[in-house]
Length: 115
Image (cartoon, rainbow, N blue to C red):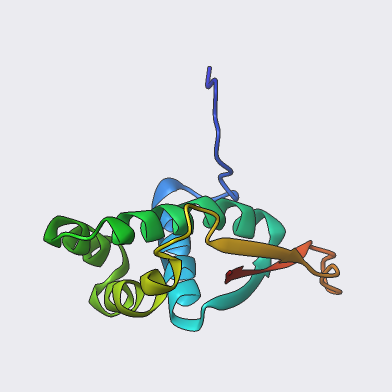
């Protein structure tokens, strides 16, 4: 019996779900604003905030961990361009804005972006 399950599974197994969020994180870092479903945006926001916090800590170990998670190019952009904007900010680096539902399947949409 599974208890205390916190995160959404999106009807995917663990591998495809991790690949989905890695792709969403990379897209968010490269474009700084993406449109996705509301549920995916709500799951993506804490993950993106944690990566920014890790990058703010600095250090070579943090850079290597970010490169392992995101890839070298995305990690460089995060450390070089995104993090300097949030040095004084204590948290809440992303904003979720709701949009009207998609016409084809009425899925709730949202825009997630860096503040």
